[in-house]
Image 1 (cartoon, rainbow, N blue to C red):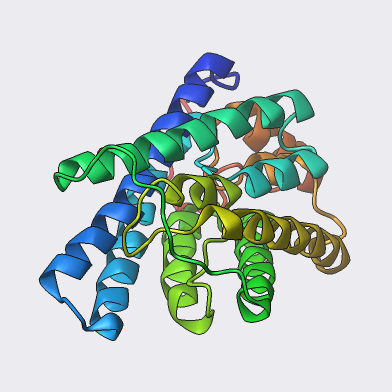
Image 2 (cartoon, rainbow, N blue to C red):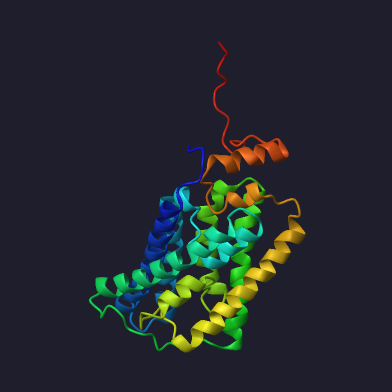
Length: 265
C-alpha cells in the first residue's frame, strides 16, 4: 500500500474512466433492455437495474483503490465537507466525472449503432421525481458514510450497488442520485435518457438530498473524522488508515479476518 494519496492526475483519470463506464453500463443496458424486451416496461427496468447494480459494484472495485470510486459530485463534495477530500480536489473531480459520463453516453450510443449524440426527449421533471431524487441521494450518502464510520468500508462497493439497484424500484425517478450521470444521460434518447429540461430540477433535488444527508450524518455520527471520510467509498491511501488508528486506537486492518500469529524473532 502506498504511503501517500495517488497523484491528482491519476485520481482524475480514475474518476473519468469510472464515470464513463458507469454511464455506459446505465445507458447501454437500457438500450439492450429495450431491444430484448420491447414494450415490457417492467422487464426493461429490471434488466436495466440489475445491470447497473452489478456494474457499479465492479466499477468501484476497478477504480476505487486509486480515487476512492466516487463517480458522483455530490459524494465528492460531501467528502470535502467532512475533511476526507480537499475542496480543491473535489472541484477537480467534478469536471472529470461529468466528462466521463458524457463520454460513456456517447460510447453506449455507438456500441448499439446509434448516432454518437442523441438528445433525450424523456421528460421526468415532476414533483414526485423531485422528491424521489432528494431521498435517493440522501440515502446513498447515508449508506456510504455509515459504512466508513463503522469500519465496514470493504462492504461499500456491494452496498452501493445494492442500494442503487433497489432504488431503481422504490423511487419513481429510478434513482439517478448523481448530477454527473444526470448530465450524461441527457445525451442519449433511449430508455435511460432524460430531457434537458428535466436536468436542472434533478440536479437541484440531488444537491438538496446531499445537504440533508450531510446534516443527518453529522447528527447520527458526530465523531466522524477526516480519516473516516477519506476512506469513502474505497480506502485508497495509507495515511487515512494511519490517522484512523491514531484517532480511535483501532488497527487499520481491524475489519480484516485475523491471520496466524507470527512469533517475534
